[in-house]
Every structure is written in C-alpha cells, then in structure tokens.
Image (cartoon, rainbow, N blue to C red):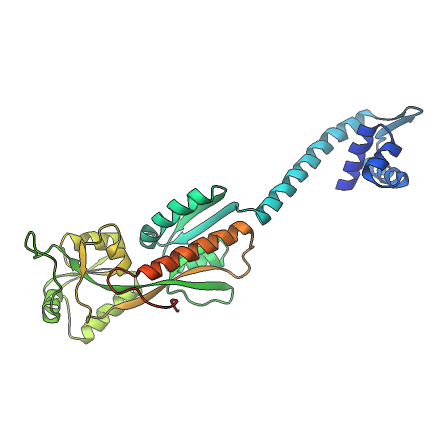
Length: 318
C-alpha cells in the first residue's frame, strides 16, 4: 500500500466514478483501475461496488477511506511543516555554554533574539566548556559557546571575542569614602598577593597555570582558596576575602565597579570564546538564523572589549 493508492481511492469515492476521478487526477482510467485492483488484492477485500450509476464504497472501503483521510491529512501537514522548517525562520535548537559565560553573553542576546524570532525555540544547556564541546560532537546540542576549544574534524569553530583570566581585588577595600579607586603600584600589587588568600576555581586549568607562573616570579600567596564556581570566587573577592583569579568579563558584568584589576604587569591567561557547531549541521533557515545571531552578538562583544583593556582591532583568532 502506498500513498498514491490512498489518494486514488479518496478521489474515486468523491467523484463517484473511475472516469471522473481520472480526469481530476490527470491520469488514465486504466491506471486507476490497476491501482485499486492491486490494493484490493493486497487487502483481500472488495473496496468498491460497481453498477450502472457508477461506483460506491463497500463497508471495508468506507473503513479504509476514514483511515486514508487521516493519513493523507497527516502527511500533508508534515509536508507543510518540513517546508516551513527549510524555508522559514523557525525550529527548535539547544545552545550550550558555561553558566558564568552565559551570565554576561545571554541577557542582551536573548532579549533581542527572542523578541525578533518568535517562531524559533531556544533551550539552554549548561556545563563546562569541555562538556559543551563534547555535547556538540555527540549531537546532544546544536550550538556551543566554548572557551579555547580544541579543534576536531567534525566541528566548525568560529572565534567570537577575547577574554583573559586575570587577578582582581575589591575596588572598595582600603579605599576612603569619596575617593576614586586608583591602580596599585606593582610593588603594592605583589605585596597584596603575598598577604591575602588567592581565591580561584580549581577546576579551571588557566587558574592552575597562573598560580605556577606567579610562583615562577616568587609570588606565593599565603593561602590558596579553591572554589568550584566562578560566581562564588567573584562574590568572595567583592567582599574582600582575597585576591581572585577571574575571567575579565565575568569580573566586570553586573557590578562593573566592584572589582579592579590588580596590576596589568602581572601574569594573565588570554582566552578566546568561540561558537561551535557540527560541520554536518542541518542548515535550515532557522539554524542559520541562530548561527548568524550568535556570531553577530559575539562580534559586538569583541568590539566593545572586556572592560579592562582597550577594545582589540581586527577579528579574534584561535
């Protein structure tokens, strides 16, 4: 049984004769007769009664017509839905990123995108950059925002903007009321590091590397306070618990004056934030719209800079 046989049956039932149905369908009458005969043979049942007035459905024919109408309607709806997905800005997509990256990237992006694209559904998926990259590879999510991704054969990697893991202290600590925050001298910055705990997210490899680089400069904080979350590191630094290792954009979002960079001559770890998707991503208009919107927003962040260094020129590179 195929779809054309069902369409033939419905047309004959509606027209009341094989000849009239053949004209409507623009096929020959023998073509209809052969198709219905094959259908009757397959089902082992007579579907039409024939007399001098034309044809009418038998009881089994009526049953088949009811199901055929449902099947044809569903297939027609599926055809329309698929064409819309291919040709219209619609669809459902999953975007993955680390929570702290999403906290500064997503608010402005989503407030604009969701208003402009009401027929595109976005679901958010959170995890470390390594987990986000793996989820893209395994097709569990469509797009990922990843810090310093590792090249993979099946991935498209689009550099969006730069960041850097850097040293931060509370802007208010030691500041007199009404006085502007001033940059510490290099010697005072070293002294601060030698006197106060260093707070960092232990699972982030950039932090471990920076601690080693500080040690190579004979800068050893009296205590290393490892946390599991960048937001907790940021909160502890704002409240003066110690010096923090944080991505600059994480340090600056939400409370841009709460933390200040300890000193520009101290080590930092440059990062590149990239958009990832599979090379075989089904490129519907909706998928391309999501990709283009994410890329455009990332480029805007690149042009704006991280708030602690002058905005860079040119496109970001891996």
